[in-house]
Image (cartoon, rainbow, N blue to C red; front, top):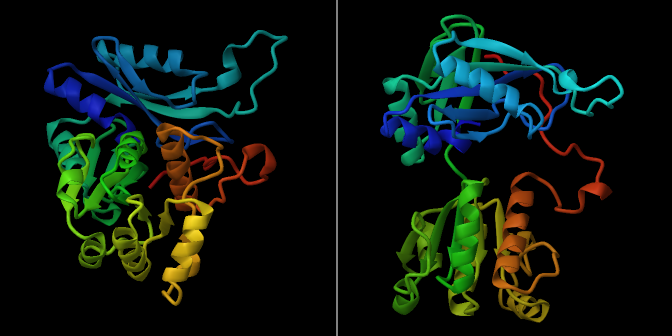
Length: 327
């Protein structure tokens, strides 16, 4: 996905180094990565991202370097089992992939994508699938030029994760949430907690009562609220406001005994049956990092409509297996 590699692309663009992109635009069977998966290869030899999870990336890097050296943009067919010896078993994800290899978008499109991502606004990006492989960008898919065939990726605003309590655990959760591309806000009315300096850069830190703040900024169905303060005066009002505001996932930190007491206090609150408590998946961890991982794992599972069990015990698809994304 463009978002996964974009800041790598932007950093090299700002440094004056050209970048080539390789984008998975079609596939004739299942694969390890979803359509839209992207690799970015810079002129200094560094690269980020993947289109297959690891098995064909060396081929893609060479193709991208050729484009950087002046070769024409093109759609490259790649099959993971293509380079196996006769006696080697082909991988399960042996579908042929169509990978568009081309220079990163020119300044007007690049700048529009960068501004949208920085301001957390939705944006639709189109690439023609025939020469000259033109880029286009608009706030929505419907506003893109009507030219076909085109590969279109819609980059929605990030999901919002609201944490109540500027605690040491909140700092670790916020740090681990960064590569998940969650927009994190930490809300706490206590001045000493807000001023601790523990939270990573990029986190929105607000000194306010979370119940009042959530009422003014109601979360949507794709958003999550997790209470971490361990103070019922702070967390209970946040839970009520989050449930009333329609947050897709609402969870509360605490032991089972603490949660039982919480449910008694909140009895009669509309939507209380949606409250996940104690927060997190059962990973058996004890450290702050393990607790943060448990909490975020549940946030991800809930956001994807999954229960969060072990993959070996599930019969549901592991990932996205669409074979085309032409607009």
